[in-house]
Length: 446
Image (cartoon, rainbow, N blue to C red; front, side):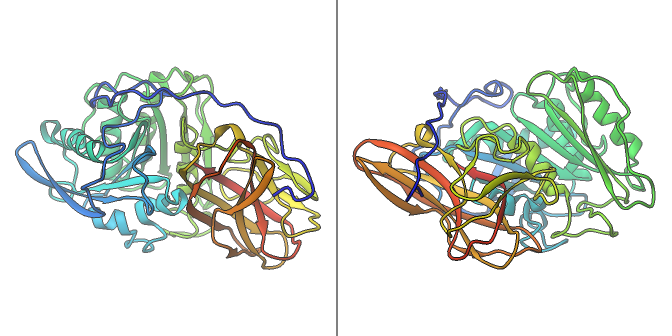
């Protein structure tokens, strides 16, 4: 990027220890990088439906492997459990709310190509977990998937709505050292809670007017992990009935690495609530963004970017031209984004130095949400590499037209390589032409 300027100072990074794959029930502790046996192997698992024998039964699950899958890179693993009467296909496609946009509860579009997604199929389209058979099913899927694919074992997550939320709660109770965090949407205690005394990062969203699984049950489930996680007890604020809004509270005093977040919303038993209107909406729901922010706060070895959610103001970022500021008027998720205004050249944009973090000849996946302050320019992300005194520019994502009315995701997977000694590397967002101000939010480069 730096055609006429110097790059940021080098950022130090801690080395990551690579450990053997733990069996379910004895996972590596939170924050310790651990890759699986599938790393370096040519995978045999395919996108789509797979079957496995578990507890003497043939069970099925859908796997979504990232495009451009790199068997040398550990990926995040997310399980999405369907509701009562739902199917794995419903979760994988998002078809009951908005096809593709709501795939895996809306998380797939936020993840880009950074995550392996799994949609298991329940017996009788439910999760009764009789005798713990559904928890065992999850154990068996993890062994199969991680024996074949490269997974970061400190980055396993589970979520689900209604009965799927109950199943995710059962995993929070029974497998707190296997999963890094869970997200329960309008769940109840329907799938049991074997154990249930250890901490796990816990997110729960529930509707005030839920007539199927009353919010009082959700509060009780939440409070169990408020205690387990050592958080300060409180009665978090909730929106007024008739407001059609939501209120999200992150508890204080929790043990390090074990937050509890509660999101109450003024609606009924629905999975994709939106502010200002009733019913589900795949494109307008706030819930995927809140969940994804909760899950991605635990990234240990993946994202090379500092302050990737922009919630810490301009920390870690600079501008190659114009003015960089923390914006609170628009945000993709959370409460802040970054605005680069006053640009005088198309190549100028928000940037971050990643020199120390890069590995030569490695595949990286980029995802950044971008919005225009004015106009409809084409935006893209670029990596400037300076090696042996020569600077080259690697386009990380295809150019996409952005506008003032909403957020556009720039995503792509690229192999980064150079010859000689790398002295500077800068990740940045630019426009193909023009000098319109640009907002960025929720960025990853991993």
